[in-house]
Image (tube, rainbow, N blue to C red; front, side):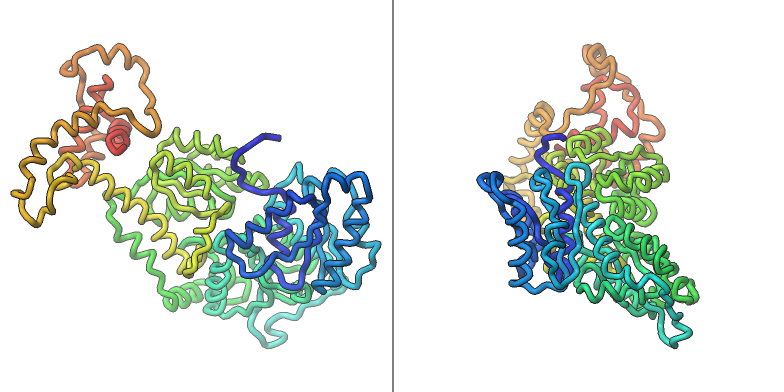
Length: 549
């Protein structure tokens, strides 16, 4: 066990809470001490839910450990049933109560309550939140549908003269943009011509879970939550499921093809029809952006496996970025992330230690970080543009506006969320490069008033400001000093080789003419002061980072 200030996932009982809170008519009785009741705040304060989480805690205290804590749990179960009248009950223990070994499942069964009781055994010291959510959903589905497995027969859409119907599985409470993704995917399915049987766990009741086998196929929106369940449904009820997550324009087209094939439709004709109907803006926007400053941007990606893999595909294939880092904290999906990282020629980062992630980001010096709230804080400290793409989340990741990540509208949202930080970074970059010029000084009037309003005075002051800035210490990462730099620094600046490599010259020409001269001078000054040899593309970008601080 490792002491940490931040964690990407909570213990598995928080995952079980996400399932219970997402559903209707389900109540969770959690054997836990007083200190483990903090998780309620995740749903009311961060997700802004307007109702209390359906969880009853035993809240035993230290003095109760010398008495009968098992009786406390049985009383809590009975009181929860009497008060809330749920249609199904989850019972389990928190990470602390697990040490007492009171067997919540056996205690609840002894009460013989007149409803399904699903006992959860979630090993808190080996597993984490997403696994706990996936296991809870699987246990619910298996218990509520298992009685239908023997001799189950499903009629085809043609036999019943109806459209194909599917289940949407995976969205939960506290999920990153799950609320809006459901709306967008529902629109997609309506445009395709496929009916929805059940959406679960979000918004489903226990009776809805029992109807899952009636669908012709399943849509696995969030594999971290739904993968175990859809595989069991496939084995038990012969229900195929989708494997493509519709994040990005290309993936959305592939998703439509996959759904159309499962529904017995012409895949290509369906894609053409649906895309013309929904008219996404992202394809044109991504072709029309300023390639000088956006094409080839270096991006580091980290998050849950589903969003990280999808983000890498969108970044590389649809926006023309260069993926320089890819990783996940979801060890259960490490194989998928490793396979994706191999496509981009990068070393995968599989870790739940945010300090390792920060070290990796600092090492590759990307221009954009796509990650969780943790990476957002890391990028902020390092002065790098960032967009949040995955849980763990904070309150701003549950916006009042419609903001899906999936489908064609999700593609539009991704473009805005990822490109705008770079555009703002471009503005700051230009301001930085011109900050010694008179029109960008704080003590002069606006340029449309003419240069007579203090411009001459500012121009005189400009050079000392630049000199002071050159002597200032960097406030972010200390750039690595090349081997042998100590001896080179002793040489006069004039003796240094300021030859540019052909690759560096080509990169310099990508910079607009009105700032190219200053970029060349800053780079040469940076190289001269450090005794660097021929100026390479790396030198150019190191100089840009240095003078941008």
